[in-house]
Length: 318
Image 1 (tube, rainbow, N blue to C red):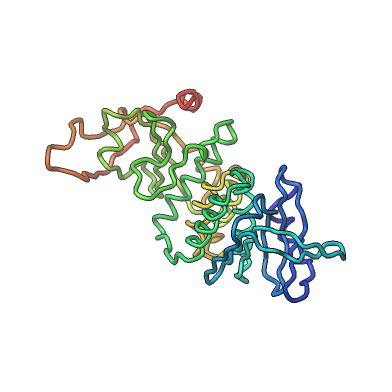
Image 2 (image 1 turned 90 degrees about the horizontal axis):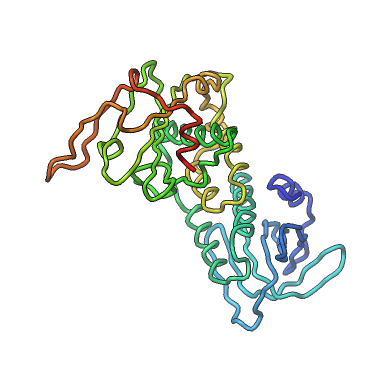
């Protein structure tokens, strides 16, 4: 079985080929001819045999990536040379985390996309370019919220519900998960002892949606589940979803492993204090926002609200 870790290890052990050559190893992933390897500068390479060699060759390059479409490659494998027209994506970064992200995302891409589409390959290059170029760094509050979303995915995955399939991956969305056109889910987490969360008014009152709130109480613990470990868990859950993995990578890419490992919460405490509520059972203003008023926000105390049984919530999503 080809995993991110096994491919990374094989790349580390692979010899650097001579100038102008590629050292490539085919992986058994699908019907596609998919290869990983190194170029003559020792950079990590993802490559596929071209499905249309008549198209004009082209090359795109950024600081950390090169995409060569319909490249005529001198390939070294098992001591033999072959000349093949290929589509080659090269990661110029020497950062281990970026190389691992490169492998993870190209694997997910080939599993979930039409590998023969030149358009999709250009989209992959564009997505990776944006990922490696962005310098945005989430705040501690945003990291806590991200942790809560990841933990909800992990918690319900163990119960047979994969919420990652419904995760909204664009910024500024009203809800964290969109189950259907009508059904929406919002995750709220807090370090307070009381179950008090901050809401936008439209997250609790809407004629358009049937809304559930997943509330998680957090408690810091040096022996707790780290954000680093939680990310790895959810990456395994969503291993074949390119968009989900890209969203995760984009959120954490500007934090090093030490920072992510330092964010830890008591997993037993979270398990005992994860509850689901119907939005209509949460204290709120009962009226729509008056005309001319927008972005109303307030805190609601859920301590006396009636929680939904977990099995009812799971049934509600189906």
